[in-house]
Length: 119
Image 1: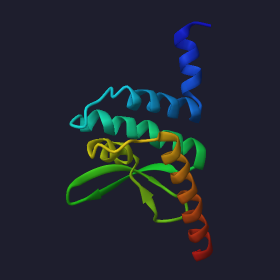
Image 2 (image 1 turned 120 degrees about the horizontal axis):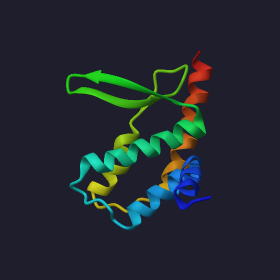
Image 3 (image 1 turned 60 degrees about the vertical axis):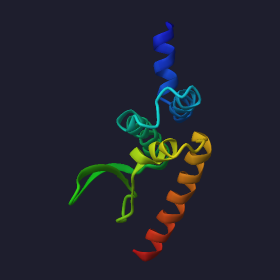
Image 4 (image 1 turned 120 degrees about the vertical axis):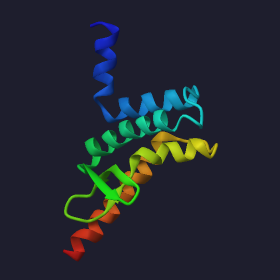
């Protein structure tokens, strides 16, 4: 198996996606001013959440435009993974991708339970 194929297989897992993000952030591959690129990392983060939690990509529209978000199914709760990493990097805060992911997964589960009780 070639290196590219092996990397592609690793990327298909949640841990692989998060590991890639961690490596890019630790190497400071993007400057805090590279908002677009940092938000692209947020797409990878969001895909990991979709894979782990079963949330779905949606789009929300407001007076500022249209933005991708994740929706907890069966609820009106939406999350914006594109900015979860970028806003922290832009502020100069250290980002532990695995901690942020675990925290977000726990919050999604809490919100899902609240939504289930309200239904």
